[in-house]
Image 1 (cartoon, rainbow, N blue to C red):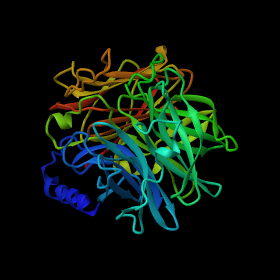
Image 2: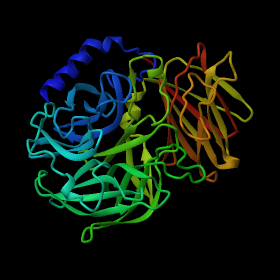
Image 3: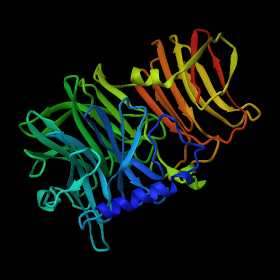
Image 4: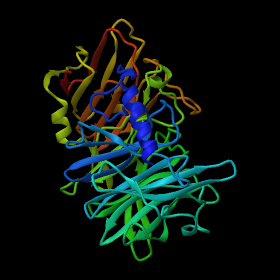
Length: 484
């Protein structure tokens, strides 16, 4: 593996200056060059957060997967580290696919999927790598540690990936994604005493028709007295405003029966109501808090930073702190992230019928809006000389919905959805007083409201950008702007 990693790191160092910086965010984890997708191995190790990710350094499109690597003390400022994993063995020669990390005996272990894609067969097995310094990893000579004989008669080795490892009551467990013979997603549960020798325990959860033809990137953890299973279905059927993207992300909330190995679901819901959010993974912080990041992109859509030959594609969301409230999953922006995001701020009060214009002084902006019950507002961003090309975020209290749209704005992002769409919306309770946190970082917007989120990327072509806000009476607007 050392040769393939050395080659990747050398290529990065020799070509990083060629990457166009125009659309690169200041606070989101990005690849130094090339392609990024799923977050992997999100873990707290020796006083720092480590985040690995699916990475192809040689082009800004998906290719044989490596593991990129970064670390952070505050989940906002990331230090790039050398490539952690690269295809090198017979069991992972076509890619080191997604997986997770765990700390054992002050060593950092990576459990990942080894991908082999020959003409006559495709095999996905689970493999282990270990590090004493958290930077340089060695693959076990006994890999794979979970392979075909573990799942004989249970799942197909061709679709068996994305292990998430965790420790619970003195044992190690891993949840792994697979599918049934009739194309329904299922999550398999395995157990181990040492991370090397694994035993199949159960089918943790099996999907119903309409819940996706394959499940990917599971995560399973206790939270506020319940267990939460996060996963990303491929082609989940649309339900009103939900699951419009070809690949979705769902959180199942319920109770775990460790005697039977089965997960009983109380409820489930889409995790993000936007256009760009997939494959989230969580990490437990030093004080027991649960943080999550996701890939802020979407499969089967064009990515302008690639189309424009900028030399990179993909980013992570900002971290989100998770909790349960009244039986539903709540996502909030950590206060520490807000504090670091800002260096100066101003405030305005918007009265009914008025529209205010705010110059776009920088590409990193945090809007804080408080809407009284029944009050609506529109936040627009675009070129003041071209009113038809505007990025819009609309809260319509009468329709009980908040929407975001990038239609007709900037470089076109096209996808395979039919019908095509460039906007999405979520339902909100107009009887509540609602607080909106809206963060813009160069080419992305993330909205936090009432524990819900929407994420979206965009690639502007504006020359004289401004923000415009139109609001009903009773909407108090506080604008806080980070200036580079």
